[in-house]
Image (cartoon, rainbow, N blue to C red; front, top):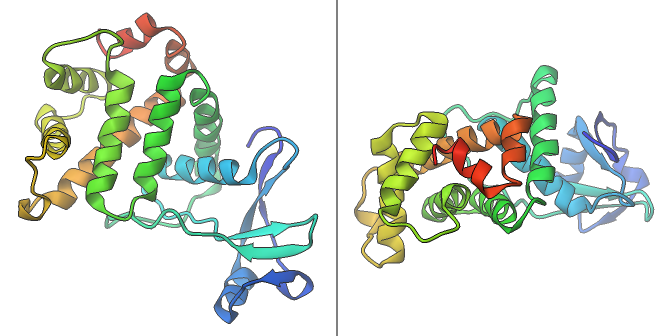
Length: 244
């Protein structure tokens, strides 16, 4: 998955490691673990690489991939890390990613690692999508998804009719339904302006799923196409991909 990061099959001999706050259940899970993410700490921060890997898996498809334990070979220890990705509310969620699918995950992983470093806009958009995936509540996740989308599509200059431009640009880029786009943007606007009552809306989950689907479509198209990814290095080129 790039220099210094490998996905590998593993057999973890837990009993030979110094266990840091592990329960009986944890030891069972470790013995059942089939794969691990091997990270060269001289080249990557483990927490950051793990985060990008989980984000890449979920951008590829609705999946519940978790990195739950960390083995430090230098200290010969194994410890539990916090599960930051609790919320994947869709009927077709899976924990399985095949070998052929992993090739696409690698492209997404390499793409977002480049993308997030281009400038503050791409860094913020990547940050928002990470927050969306780590949110425990649907409303928070929807808000961060829409923030990511607005960060990607907004102009550097002041604009009028920003709702219409948000809708038109995303529709132009990925062809998503304009009514659905308006619905998720309106929730964001009503929320920040104090007009939205979450408990009164009977389509909460549907709107959240739409916001995640749009993000997945947009980020996949950007990260898996080198020309589109490169367009974010120049603001005029970036606006062209969204129709101006």
